[in-house]
Image 1 (cartoon, one colour):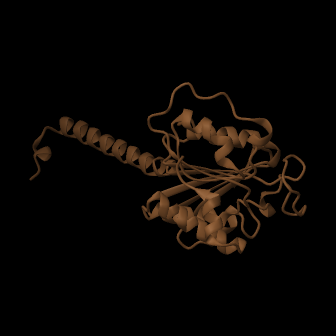
Image 2: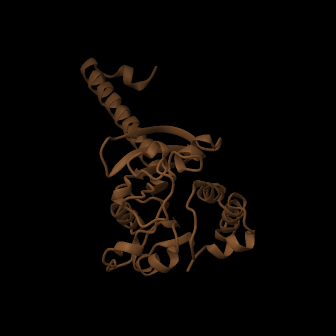
Length: 257
C-alpha cells in the first residue's frame, strides 16, 4: 500500500491537494513552453507590394494593392508567401488571423519538424514599420523572444527612408537573417553588423522577392544544411522560376559578409 494511504486523513487530504496542484502547475508550464518556444524559431516580415506607397516598378493593380493581402504579389498571389507555404506539404498551416486595419493585416503560423514559422503581412503603406520591426527582431529586440531566424521580404524601403539609428551594442544572441529585397547587402550591412546579426542569405542586386526563393532556403535550414548549401539551393530555385542561369542567381544571392 502506498505510504500516503497510511497517513492521517486530514494530512492525506492536504498532501493530495498539494500534489494535484503541483502536477497541474507543471503541466501548465509545459504547455506554455510547448506553445511559446517553437514560435520563436522563425519570423518573416512581409511588406505587401504597393504601387501607390512604394517606389517599386508598378505591377498590375490586382497584385499591387497593399491593402489586399489575399491577392498581393508577395502574399496571396501565385508565388506569394502564404500561397506557396500553404501548398508546401512539408509545412503545416497552424492558423491565420486577419485584421481590417494595419499595420499588420494578416498573421499566419506554420509548423515543420519542430520548427514554427510566424509570417506577418504588413500593409503596403506601412513598409517603414515592417522594415524597422524586422531590424528590431534582427537585433534581438522583437516581440518574440530569441527567434533563430528572421526574414524580410519585399521592397527595399531603405532606399527611400533610411535605417533607424545604429545599435550601440551588438546582441550576443542575435539571430540569423534572410533579406529578400533588392540590393539588400548594400543597404542593410552596416546596421546588421552593428546589431550583431549574421546574414544567412541576402542580395547584391535587383531581384523578385517571391516565395520560391525563401521556401528553398527554409528547406535547407530545416535540414541543417550549411550556409553555402542553402545559398545554392536558393539560387537554383530562383534561376528555375526566373528562367536565368544558376551562375547569375548565385551572383545575386549571397551568404555572410
